[in-house]
Image (cartoon, rainbow, N blue to C red; front, side, top):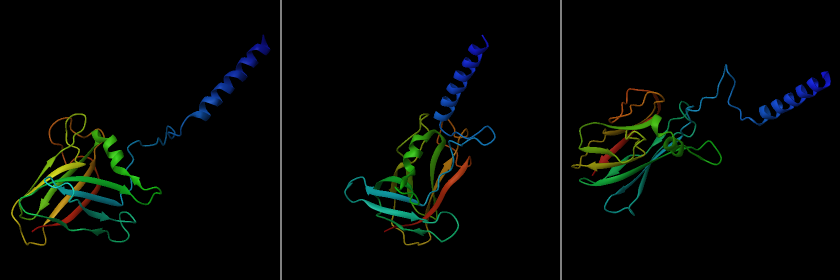
Length: 194
């Protein structure tokens, strides 16, 4: 009887060891791995083309190769034509990884906790419309439409692009709330409409 109990204990221990060794590392109770951990973003590309001519694609980029802090980023000036509708696709990358990490895919997968916000600074005619949404029909913003108005020559106008990370905070209706959550990236793109 005693041998049988010892044998059962050995088998139970071996099974427990096998199960534990096959588990992925999800952290421990004191330090769990955060499934919504903020990613390093080194590059934001706005892939822009006129609705009337998709072949006329232009890319405007923010590149901060060493991440926040360190060296200053390079930021392209967005150049658009007046009275024109444009489609814009946002591509977010971490170029410190090899291969390059396309963070946009993760943002799309986690659309219920992310949202891009677009605001203009300066006095010019530009409207933005969301073309993609999360599971609650709240905007995501990886794809938008820009509609320009009259041309302008002011060189201090900007288009601010902000990505918010809002786990447990993103509204489940409406247009979203830019005051909620962490800012994953914020870029002020200079803009000219000529």
